[in-house]
Length: 292
Image (cartoon, rainbow, N blue to C red; front, side, top):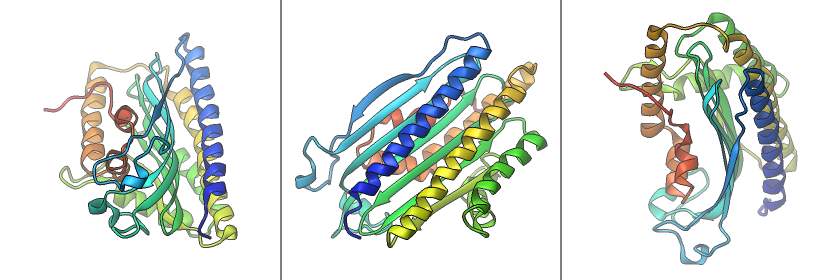
């Protein structure tokens, strides 16, 4: 297929529905804690970037909505959906699957979520789901848990949820995508992993509609698994007491998280290189962190 516009629209609708369900769940947790916190939504429009082909620099290049909440349980959580298109800068196009300086056009729709928690016993978390087209079409995404104070029970339950989503769609998916997450979410200059892992996949290519439907169903399953397990982990830990030492550990670990996202994260680079909204791209950064 050469025209994936209907599939991009379907993925966008699914991502927006998942966003709404997640945000409602998180707002419900805040209400349980006696907070009136709710998400504030800010729409944004994409602007052409330097080096982009002139025929793609008009006003209709897409955009998205940035959703942010700051409350008693969720110190800062962002849930963004963006749908953009245009032409990649020629010096960047070659780094993207199926694109090149001679074929720089792309479309991308995706959901990105990062939650930084007030209580250091509640793990921070990241999830991203996306569908992109260049001369190829593919899905990518995953979810990973980032506790400053890891608990074996939480790690096991999170991985069990991701495994169940994987096993329903591919017998080898969990082993492959867990290993990919372990490799990807590693901070070489610190010689440590960003968290306790999860799953990560990319370039899950769609050469026909049957493959698209299968990959779309899997990506939706990952989102559904996240919606089931993460609120449960938050409720499990959000009332636990913590010490100043626990908080210090959380702030130091957030520094590692920021380092990874600014130095190594592909999504951050893609957003910055394609004229994304700066506040939406950098919403992954924690509200407070420390470095020695």
